[in-house]
Image (cartoon, rainbow, N blue to C red; front, side, top):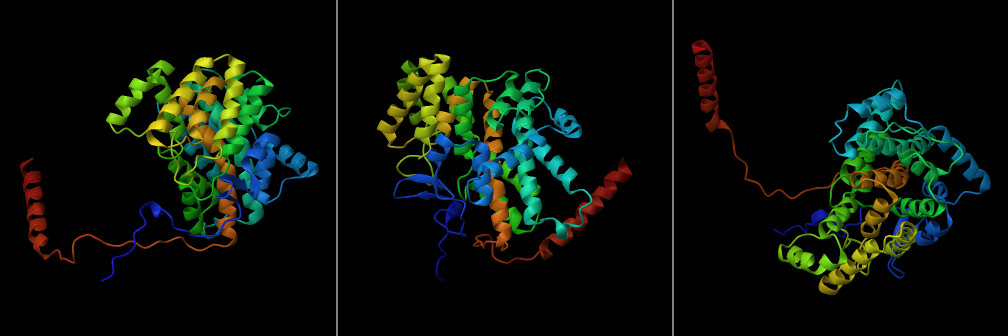
Length: 396
């Protein structure tokens, strides 16, 4: 019998086509609908990139204005959703707030729309749902951080673009332009990345013809894991452990001796370094200068150079984004929810693409358990247990 070729983790398996993004191996560049992401991050607002991911082309002035008008009309958290978020324990992870909020938003939106046979919705309905989620997630993430700090919510403003309003709702003050720009770039860089674990989760759920919200909730669950979205939080925990650049060498000696996984380095797709890192590192550099924190740059550069020299493994996007979000003022536990707010654009683009040419995703497995066996030998034991239970009840 020929042994099956098992691809653990589906490594190297091509399961479908996508026109949304790819890594160009010739330039080691991540492309969104053909555009290098570093060019998009340097020139576009996140709203325009969201439009690109959903529609295939960058918007003209009128299309961007219409998207912004719609997005700004749906920024506020519905009262019942905020009340439900308040039921989540303050010491739960913020991703639990986000997952719960999206689930309730979906239930509200889909109420009265028919049976599960109608769950997947039309292309027009799903684009509208995608825009509404894109619009409200910043308020959900911002409110989560504020309530854990004991602060009241800050209402959204319709005179600020996406990135500036996100920061306004989180911190209650207008951010400097350099901070808005760095944050906008990070959102674009996190917006999409082909068939990663959370996106594939969303596509699997979508392939059953479930609804868009269920697919996004599943994707949020996948993103919560430390081997995926949670890695950006782990980078800050590592920085906190090390403390200063002077401690990098001894810390790394011990970490490698203990065979610890150093989060923020390495990537399944990139072998010559994550193409998004230079853009995010440049944004981090502007924040270091803005906040006058050369100590952060020293720690970052020292750990990177030491680890690359010893292991030959390069940073991924989580490595510069973690300290960047920390400098802006986000709590470490908020980093992965920020990832959700960005990646919802890619998830929903993939959900709509999956529905446009759907096939149920149902892989096979190779069984390696016991050979066929039968339960005859256990029947008497089951009967004896029932007798014993009755005797215990009578004695009691």
